[in-house]
Amino acid sequence: MPVNTKFHRTCLGEIQDIQPVWMMRQAGRYLPEYLAIRQNFPDFMAFCFNPDIVTEVTLQPIERFDFDAAIIFSDILVIAQAIGQGVWFEKGHGPRLKALPSFQSWNSNWVETLNPVYDAIKKTRSKLSQDKSLIGFAATPWTLGAYMLCQNKIGTQQNLYAAIDNHAGQLALLLDKLIPIVAQHLINQVTAGCDVVQLFDSWAAFCKEDEQEDNLINPLTTILDIFWKVHPNTPVIYYGKEASHLYKDILNRISGPLVFGYDQYVDMNSTNQVNTPSQGNLDPEVLIKGGDALDAAVNNILCATKNRPHIFNLGHGIKPETPIRHVEKMLQLVRKAG
Image 1: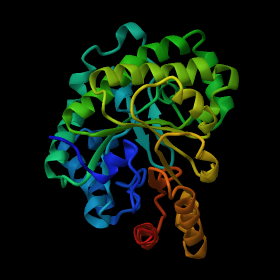
Image 2 (image 1 turned 180 degrees about the vertical axis):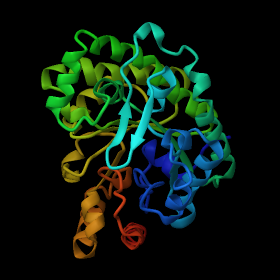
Image 3 (image 1 turned 90 degrees about the vertical axis):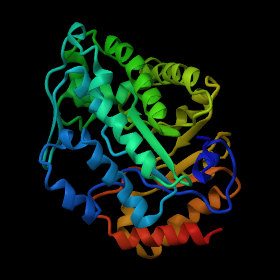
């Protein structure tokens, strides 16, 4: 079915009178309806592999806030789980992973393992209004690899590089191994019903400057090349946390519809020189604070991006303690701006 949503058109470069809006982690722990379901699933990964439940929670923020796009409820670590590295979540800690399995022992049927994710996309798309986009996602090899090597909480650049040192000589092999898997996972999500995908590079800031070419840029552009050979007209959003200084270089190396996501540390007035659609970048802490600070921050972003294709979003994922009334106020400010 041809896609003609406001969100999708913005990703392709069309300027809107009222910017489309969604939030990273919009289906999650700040919503009481999500928490009511989640308490029945102590195993988070099992939760992510339940198509009926995933469909329900993916649609919750659309039903409550009428966002312009839904993002399939999943986790970047489903790939690690699918290739055979056990993943579980501990309250107050986050993800934990078993030791990185040898490359020879990786599950070659990982696509079959991820079929519940693709089934959830099909179910969600069938229930989602046709004027809403559906976003699929994955992590870049660098960010996914960081979790796979560290096993426990990454925390600092020092922790990450200590884990890299403990796996001497394996980082390059790991990234090379992940590139086609990440690309295929994105391809499969679009085939299942997503019309936009996002690549999260949440740990990009921890990559040493002299390694950014090999560890960030080359894997990303290779994934994009693979992806666009199959889905040449499907937009990709790249969110590189604290990595926007690389965006010009990335843009010069790609040939498909790319959107750059900006974190909260970027002044959106300074991004006009990067000639591609943008997304971001309200500080999640300001959304928690609310009041005049929220009004001013939203207005600043809208003014800075008024004459360009921009998707209003946060600079990082929404936090669990965020008051719902502040989300409602943010949406009111964005939607009345047109």
